[in-house]
Each structure stands twice: as structure tokens, then as C-alpha cells.
Length: 339
Image (cartoon, rainbow, N blue to C red; front, side, top):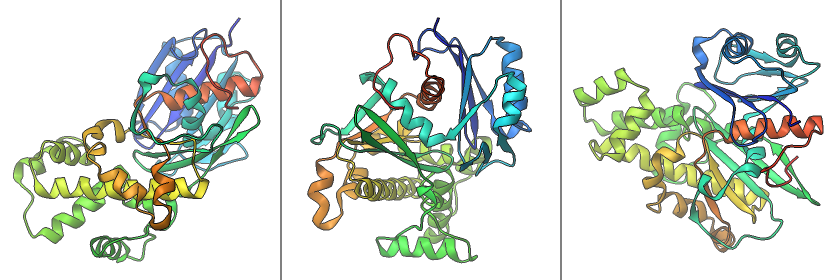
């Protein structure tokens, strides 16, 4: 019998929970929760299992945090995640906690051709190292390293490394964000949080008041979503400049990550933002910044660059990890050997 796995993708904005059984790609139950509306993951899990009772064989949660000895203090949430507490709630001997980008990386093994969109086909090297970079509420990064017939996933906190300005405008942006003495990381300029930071900087710099209709849209929905939609619809020049600058920085940092890992096997762009801005990613802004690395431009031009379209990739990866950890057969349909 295939194992019954509870998988979770715990983010700063939303938390997704799913139960996987016979089909490793299709959950038998799935729910999305607003993370800030709950006091903790235990509460969410109990609510989920009340609605979807199941006899679980294992559980794994990808969390936007550094994981230390079964403890995760989430970066963009007020509450922590504890493996022992979750195991107690679920009635399991143990529960696995992994970094959210680690979960995304494991999930690549179960993606199908329709789950990705290619920005650059490149010339992939067989068995080459791969990387994942994901802008959502924050910015996550991970590496996938070949190891014989397997691939090892290396989680990082690369999104919190120092932002490196590349132009006079980006120097101004850096100085604006550093004025209060705070650390200016890539996450602060390349994420949902970063998009809003860039917009506020450019709006103030422009001297053009924010249109009343845009103020209302920002008030009615997530500010980053409103700014992005306005930019894509070409309704406000400052929003357009904001998205252009954020995507340019995104491409530059993806290139940085690709060089650090020498990702000859490919670069995967994950997170919730990329699928919503595909037209912008296809206009060349991202790839121009990605390859603009001087003498190493040719190296980067040969690296494949893909956008992950499947928003359940982290859930697939968490379930994949739980099966591998339990050394339980994954069932028919599972692809790859990422463990």
C-alpha cells in the first residue's frame, strides 16, 4: 500500500496543506490558509484533519525559515514551528521539517513538462548542478547537487545576503533603504516585500502623487499584487518602472546564484510571483541581467532557465522527502531520484 503523507508548505502569506496517497502528484485533500490568521501550525493542522480525517504514515513541512534540530522560527511570521509538537498533534513518532526552498527543490523531481515554462533553453550539462530561486513574500534560494544516481538538496538563506547595486539608481535605492541603519538584503528588493519597497522609493523619487484609483486598489488588496497588476496593464509609469527594476534585480541575483553553484544543469525560478509576471519575464529584462556577468556571460548563456508554474511544487517536494525519509516506495508516477 502506498503511504499516506501529510505535506505542508508554510509561507509568510499562505500555508498550504495536502494529503498524498496513491498518486504522488495529486493530493486527495488540499487546503490553503492565511498564515497570519492562525496562532500556529498545530492549530491549522488540527483544523485541516478535522475536515479531512486520515490515518497518516508520515508528515513533512517545508517552512520559510532556518531549521535547527526540529525547530523553525519563521522569518515573516510571529510564530515558530516545532517538530515534536506537530508529531504529538498528529500521533506520529516524528515529523520532518525542511526549509521551504529545500521542499521546492525536492519537488522538481515530480514536475512534468507542462509544469514549467522555459525562458532560455541553453545547453544543459548531463548531471549538472541546478539551482532554485524563488521570490514570493520573501526570497529563497537552494542548490541541487549531483551525487551518483541521486541529487542532494542544499538549503540556504541566500536571500538575506547583501544587496549589490549595479547602477546609480540602485545605489539610490540602497541608500534609501539603508537610511534607518537596517540591513539591505536581496529579499528587501526582490520579493513581494521588495516590490513594495521599490515602489515607495520610486514614487517618492518621481514627485508624482499616487493616483487616487491606485491608492484605493492598494487598500483593497495586497499592495504588491496591486502594483504588479497595474504595471502589467501599463496604467501607471511608476508601477511599470517598479516591476522593471525588481525583475532586473531578480535576474541579476539569479545569475549570482547560478555562478556560485555553476548551475550547468539549469536554473529554476519558483515562488508565487514569477507565474503572475510571465510576460515581463519574457521581455528580456530578466535574462539580460542574468547573463550580464562580464567574462562569464557565455557560461550563463548556456544555462537553461525555467519558470516553475506548478504552485504545489513545495508540497510535492515535502511529500517526496517524507517518503524518502521513511524509505517507503513512492508509488507509480514519481520521477527522478532526489533524496
